[in-house]
Picture 1: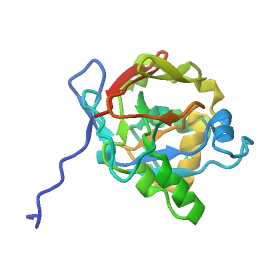
Picture 2: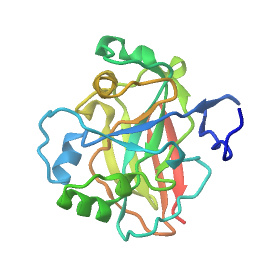
Picture 3: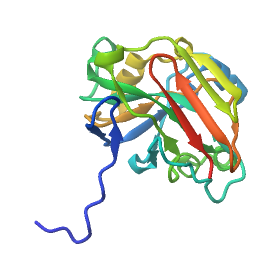
Length: 228
C-alpha cells in the first residue's frame, strides 16, 4: 500500500561500541526528580507523585551535532539527565520487574526555553513549546545495561565553557529508575523504543550562542555540545 506522503525518517540512536542503532518510539521526561532542583525552581522537595511530560523523537540530537539556539526565547537552560532506553514495555509494570525492560542508558540534556515555560506555568498552560522544540534533547550513544549494569548512584555533572554548573548523584533522584518505569506504565502503554529522561540535579542555568556544554555521568557516558 502506497503512502500519500513520504514516510518520515525513523529516529535512530547510536549504541556504544557497535554499528547497531536503537529505534526511538517516544520520549518521556520526569519533572522535578531531584529535591535540590525542585527547591531552586520554587517547589516543595517532598516526595510527591511523579509527573511526566513528552518531547518528540526527532528532538533527539546526535552527539556530533551542534545545538541551534531556538527562536522565540532569550533564556534557554541546560538540564543534564540520565536517559533510559527500553527494550520492552507494557502496562502496570511492577517496580520489581521494571529493570528487565531496560536496554541501556545514556546521558542527555533537556534544553528548556525557560521563559516560555514560566509563561505557560503562569497561565496554567502545557509546557510543549518550552520542552519539545527542535533539537532540544542532545543525547550520547546508548550504553547497554548488559555492559554497565543498572546505575543506582554515580556522579552526574554539567559544565559550560569549563565552569561546573550542575553537580549531583544519581542516588539523589526522588523517584528511582524502577519506580519511574512502573509509574509511567500506569499512565501510558510503554513499548520497545521508548526513551525516558529522568530529571536533573540543581544548578540549571542559561546558555548562550558560542558556549560549549560538556556533561557526563560516571560509569555511563559523556557528552559535549556547542551552542550555535
